[in-house]
Image (cartoon, rainbow, N blue to C red; front, side, top):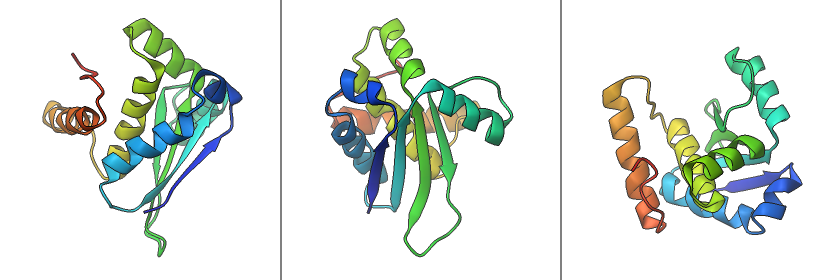
Amino acid sequence: MTIDVEIEDEAWSRALPDAEALAVKAATAALDGDGGVVILLTDDDTVADLNIRFRDKAGPTNVLSFPAPENPEGSLGDIALAYGVCAREAEEQGKPLAHHLQHLVTHGVLHLLGYDHLVDDEAEEMEALERRILAGLDIPDPYA
């Protein structure tokens, strides 16, 4: 299992000096030995660009997942997180940015593993997995 973290926006490092380690820990817990991922910690503009180009949706979002085609390295794909959106959400929700980062990395990895939340049954299954993984990281239920 390979987890690479690229910090493109230094705001992540300023706010969370251990951002890389937090992202790796969450991805490792979510992957549970299945494949590898690349995690890009970037800014809102970069995520907005990715969002419009690949999803035809304007503006930044907190996390995007991009599944990789089958490959001999076992890479599941890439995850991109927007600092500004994530920081605002954490503040609005009254939770530490570190917890929100780990939740969104977990969420992104689960998407790469094939989970989704388009319908209620899928959302319930995905959220239950997120709760279990985050509990293992000593992070409170993000949906409470």
